[in-house]
Image 1: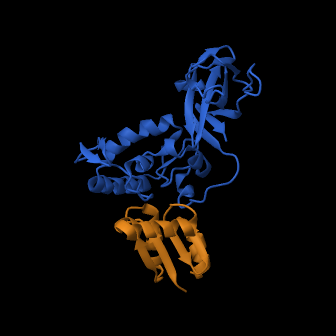
Image 2: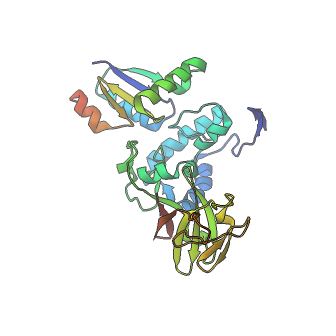
Image 3: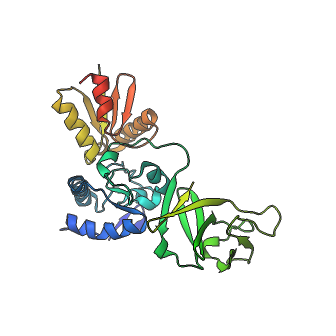
Length: 220
Length: 81
């Protein structure tokens, strides 16, 4: 453990880390986020090889395609896999910055290589797996700067702002009661289908949800 | 025509871009931003953000055109390769 910027820094990988080690750790994590390794194995190995060089120089597996600021709080968003920090951009690109990871449904990852311009307009952002959200539960997900609560009721999924309009309590940690979520802080109730509440002028924003191949997507 | 490339020494797209330019005998000036230090690095990062609007690499400048990422088709077109 060393000190950087006054904060203790703990390292996940030590000397002797191999490409196989990185794959074994990153693959299952990316899968929970709706992504898989690029279909082009030679490209994947190239990127991971570059990450191993960076690991040796810096002590962590920073993205080979992004520049680091030197501020650990900022650079945490470019430690691979950095998908949770860039969900909306990557959903638009259908890949991460490097193209190391691509959306589960992309068949030919090579087609996407080189594409960096971010598309405009609404994008479907994968947020979690259906199996990670049993019926009757709600959870918070971060999509870019947005905080969204995803609820599962019966066979349907709903997405609404995570922030209660009363005192900004986290609805994603609230209690589900049929189609309603009760804020964990003071009990304000919202209908997860349309974001409405009995309190005047306090409805919350809702988002379209799509489910495909076991992944839950929010349209933002 | 002056060609400028901002790259990271570790980035696979940057390597692919440079390899493509090299293979076609194109002369270019390259700055490997991650190998710079201190003020020089800050200035280069600021320049990349100003030119490209982001912090993605490589940034290839051909005349008035700015290409972000490895866009072989666009490079080929602009340089008539």
